[in-house]
Length: 220
Ligand SMILES: [Zn+2]
Image 1 (tube, rainbow, N blue to C red):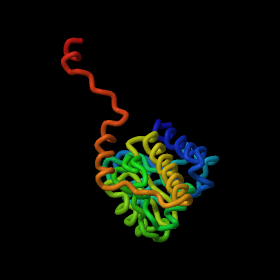
Image 2: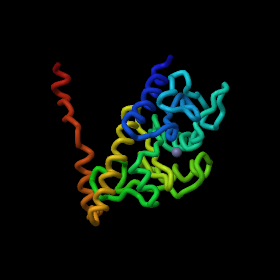
Image 3: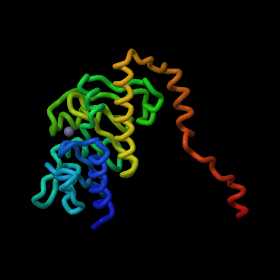
């Protein structure tokens, strides 16, 4: 069994274990060659196995009797539009979904929102689940970002690998929870464009160790 099949099945279990999904509501995928590998329709953390994952083209073609997730089109559209997206997580996690049900974006209430590539996490307008229209709406809302909310539905995010996609899903849920707590307690002060620009400069170097001096490398 390939490594990515094992990693993706483990990711789906992790997403549920971390409380981001209940039952069969979410789905995960990974770019695989020109297509993708995605969880089958109706699977749960208890039933998913590496073998059960469906290999399919981004045009919807697949072999075998196991049908892919009903949201395959949303995953495929994001892989087509965002070359950097390697793993996608879609969940109905509580707080991200609650905010999406207000049909409101996650605004610049905290500088960490920048982790998703912009000053806010947009919300895609509501359309029926499992449709090409949802794929289009999500692709538009996530453009230039690594996550978006889906109105009256949930959220979707991507990462460069399994760990990155899981971290993005967890961070979005945490920030949505913090934002809703702040709103319940009062009116959060949103950061200004200038404050977000300053934070963005810091963010670029955050967590990175200084590169080794090239001269020293050459002498080693
Ligand atoms: Zn969904």
